[in-house]
Length: 147
Image (cartoon, rainbow, N blue to C red; front, side):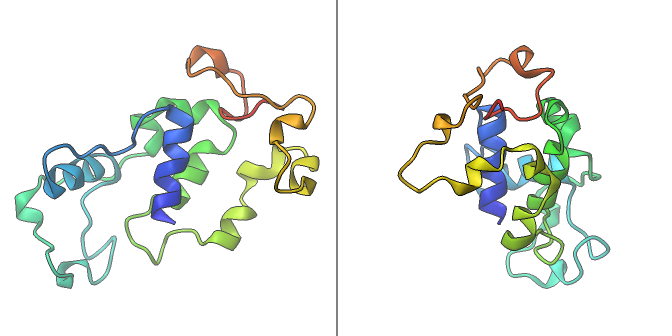
């Protein structure tokens, strides 16, 4: 579900969420700057994981995801959905079934759920892609679809 969260974020923002360019530690540093460095309090057992070397990275307190990605606040339940998917501790991360019941999906037209696989969601009246401009969706509930 972590990967789903990264793709979800990329779809909403149009950019990779945690682009690591130099090495694994570079990517982890980008993740921890946003989500906080995991500790035994936030992720019991993390210090016993192979390769756990927090001294190679900075210590960062956790922050709300929307502070790093303000566009999430433009989307009803966007911050909540993304935060549920991007939990460092896998035991706290939302599962697939629970994610499907998340309020983020409540405003989508029921007809979307009834479409056959081969039919585009854009055949549903009122559904279309937003522009990648933050201003283009400031009053919208979803970035990827407008209903």
